[in-house]
Length: 156
Image 1 (spheres, rainbow, N blue to C red):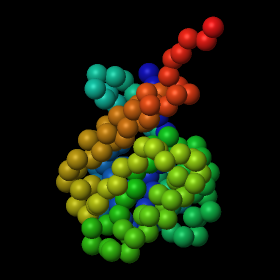
Image 2 (cartoon, helix red, strand yellow; image 1 turned 90 degrees about the vertical axis):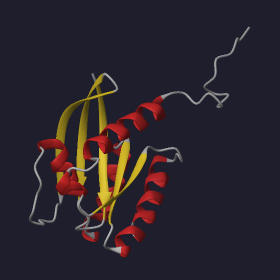
Image 3 (spheres, one colour; image 1 turned 180 degrees about the vertical axis):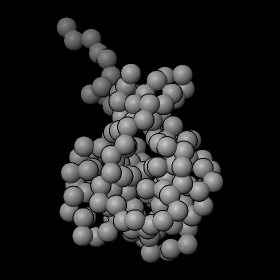
């Protein structure tokens, strides 16, 4: 069974924990309680393949932003969450994505952008979101067929 490390990032109050907890437990968190860092594990099946997701739900407040490099370094796939009713939370996503690319030193990092407001409450596309990040991580782990370094060759 493959294990995947997923990091959920976004500004404070956009629903990172609500999405994560809805996925892991099937319940919706009504009350906003700022997260410092929460870790979840869940077994799922994606495209007939059993997998274990290790999900890191991160702090959205700026005081914990310095910890992001470590989260990013250890993560394999990233879910970037913003609020559909907060324009600033959407603008906050670009520096986070830039930080992911800087830390990972790779442009093709598996990232999904999620606009949230009622998605977590109604469980709209929540399971699909986590299944899709697994697919992207699988795809990113495959050798690039256009990369001469990864293609097979005959050395004589």
